[in-house]
Amino acid sequence: MAGSSGWLGIPKGLGVVSPQQRDSGLQRNKVALRPGRSLMDWIRLTNSSQDLAGTKGLIRDVTEEELRKHNKTYDAWMVLKGKVYNVTPYMEFHPGGEEELMRGVGTDATDLFNSIHRWVNAESMLQKCLIGKYRPLSPLSSSGSINRTSGHEGDKFRKPETLGNGTSTAVKPKPRYEWSEEDTSVSLVIHTTINSIKTEHVIVDLDETELLLSIQIRQFTYQLHLDLENRVLPTYQVNAKQSSGTVELVMTKEDPEIPWSDIGTPLSGHDSCIETKNKDIHYRICELSERTQLTHDCYLFTFSFPLGTRMWIPVGHHVHLRQNIKDMDIVRSYTPVLPSVTDLKSEETETNGESVSLMIKIYPEGVLTPHLKNLEIGDSIEVSDCTGDFDDNILSRYSHLALFAAGTGITPMIRLIQRSLRDGIHVQLMFFNKKEHDIVWRSNFDELAQSCSRFEVTYVLSEPHDNWPGMRGRVRPHIIEKFLPTCEKLKQFMCICGPSPFTKATMKYLEEIGYHSSHVYVFVGL
Image (cartoon, rainbow, N blue to C red; front, side):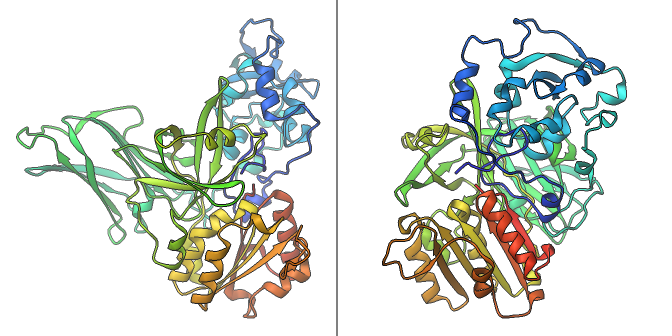
């Protein structure tokens, strides 16, 4: 499912990017690499005896003045999270191309890195390229921000953050919490001050007495991290109340006879509220509980969270899978789908936040997906917090939804279709694939179209067989115009997901025929 690349060149998988982010240049194209320059080739190189850092194994401090001197393709250093790396040997392996990687060379590129893929473990990816610690000359340049005197065009990444609907949310919220005790339970109540809080904005990780509770409040994350005074059962209730803007966590005491004098001892990051883009990604070990083959190369994986974890993932958001392969942390992003195709026709099946289902295409020459294919039921992999900025509340403004998906770009559309149909919106799906056997869940889409008058699906194949009765070719203006709803443009909203060339072409054609980007949301393609 990987294919689109982020700034450092690590494939992003299926993430999301708003029109505002797209205009800021955060969506990057993948360039053709020479043979022998794949990610697996890079892993092999880092496991060799070559001196990739160019320091003969010596670790040293690097000043800001010295860092600036190494700003050429043949001599490229950059700072990530306080450490200096020689990325010169990585130039030819970078899927985004040399020009893309050079945007961070000679500077502290931490902010640039975090704005695009903070979930990537750069220390693992570039560990053999480590030169040493960064020692800037000025305290003002040690904050991890892009050095503005270096000529780097990083300012455009410092615009106020926005949600998927373009609404600025720069004001930092000031949540507070309180706790109370009953005979058999202990409760935490968090006052978020935001009346749009839903259960899907809450993530709970409870491991014996350690409690980590995170709440997404617009572009910020509020976190409680406690060592509870006494043990509680791993089953609990989470209640989000939009009217009051509160989140209540009700935990059952393991021993009701023991009174609590306090909720517990604060741990790192407790009672903190920071911008989500600056928050460390939390992973938990999850077990593969189910695997179903959907096509010749596409599978549906369901991973169960640990007993004390609950995570309800918002529509259009994604999670990251992480696995250590040949001493390197490999991370890929995937957008959750419904656990069963039958859910397309009914109200969304709740998993009580206890599992996540992912549609994953297996690439034989890939790094992570062959490993996933070989997992047995009960095997484990790390799954991150959910991330993303798509706000499905924007759909309430429109009566018609047009979806353009190519290949595994169908994944964010699955739950979006279900949510929209449930809310009375007309949905039209144009699904692009190479061959007929690549079409995922075709029979179910056809059945849904027959049973629901508000859903239409059109299949387009770029490599059809001679008897294919449907549309042929690639995305083109005349295909788009024929497909779009006949109602007025202001009532239509569009979402796009697929490989980068598909995404760019679709967006271009929509603009050419008069659709404004404010009515379009782009999910980063695969």
